[in-house]
Image 1: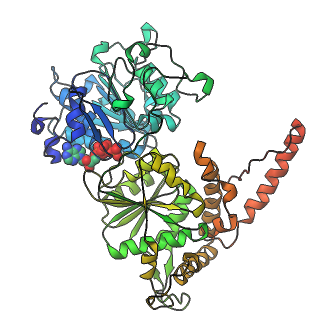
Image 2: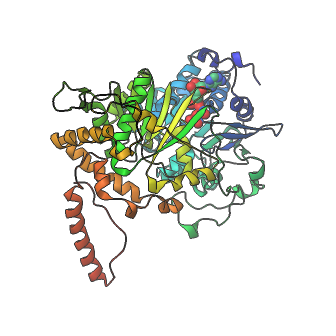
Image 3: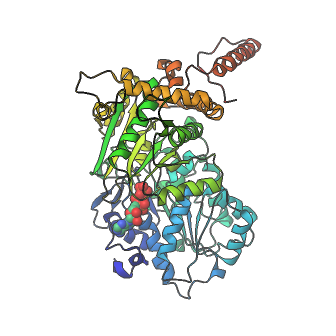
Length: 586
Ligand SMILES: Nc1ncnc2c1ncn2[C@@H]1O[C@H](COP(=O)(O)OP(=O)(O)OP(=O)(O)O)[C@@H](O)[C@H]1O
């Protein structure tokens, strides 16, 4: 492999040498062959030239594994690349934050090659500014699918006749987010679809075009994307027992759309890649994974206590807290950043102070782009901070010094669990992951065990012992049940008084309550048996949002909805449906 120090400008990034995944994957990318890397969210299995298999966990440099060869080959092109030549490489990613991150890495890689110009286009940014930049010429373009398609269709000055590489990073997430149709249209416009008619095929010599597909899970949609976008790819991403069958002949076959998940549309068995029965996840050895068993009503008091204990133990650290919905992020961001208390626990008398002393950021897909960018860059640059976020931050983001990941709401699929915890313990750093589970959800641990992921119990009682009860540090006494512990009860009381006293926060709490319930009903497949809404006590769910009782609006609008549904069913002559539906927020 090309001498690393001269290679791709990585020297500026201070890396001594390639990581294992880079040492294995880069030669494949340099060879010009198509590359298909079903990265099972936590590692890439690389079938290197010598057939040696290398497994690499999250945070081991996969981005450079595809970006470095592109920069290296581009900088040596003759005649030298100019802006007027347009775009040579296209990297398509699922989220705006990942777009900014990959753009930042590209900028560092081209620092010695001023004639190579990286750029990005993504939702939320000004189209006209992007058009101006595209008109000038962007050699390496990082893009989110929707905005890229928009420019392909409406920006005539966007030159991509010299396009040499198309990279789909986190391809399964791109498809999961519903960009399947956009991806098909993008490939069609770029003349990069295997199943396209001749006149629509790429004008570039097909051997000149290299497509790289990195995906976290092997599923039908990803395989279809592989089939329509890759030709005789080098397989990277299946270990020995899951080696793909001979796939080149299959790739030319007619393929169904990326759109539908419709069973009868799906080819029953893909003869190109065998879907492993159950992904077997391995994670960075240094990652400490634990769970805390908490009853629903005390969840938020326990989260506040754990965060307080974390930052009292070590002030400068960064913690990411994953929630299931945007409304839940907004509500918890407000509580974590605004909640006040008095040390003596005699809450109404003593001087109040912030319950948590560190900065709290929020991140989710419903925020406007400026706020998202501010949050992401702000949290990345802080030394002591909390980020409350949805899964928009679960994939690929390489935020420095994240020491702890708290999954306050379960992620569902085990692969999403692994993506989330992959935000810490990166490139050899230490990291902790903590999963909140209600007693009725403990079977989720078995589901994770099935994927080779095992957690130990978090010693929360020890944390509790460190907190004052009625103003004094507790003497060694027989353990009190968590829900009845004076500290937990007093934090819960503080929380409920705060939510009751602030109208805005009360509205956020009610909206979060409704969205959280809706998300809870959205678990799929086997997980539905673990996360069952009917096992929930709605009053306790309300308490976990600081609400003294279940919001009446759920009851009222729920009744209204029930009546409406009964009327509709009568009209259609059907019996009442069993499913429990939750209203949209008011
Ligand atoms: N050769 C290298 N030597 C040392 N550090 C590296 C090297 N290559 C990349 N890194 C660093 O490793 C970290 C993780 O890189 P990157 O985000 O590309 O990992 P990843 O495998 O893509 O992670 P994920 O699975 O979360 O997408 C980054 O901070 C990056 O700067």
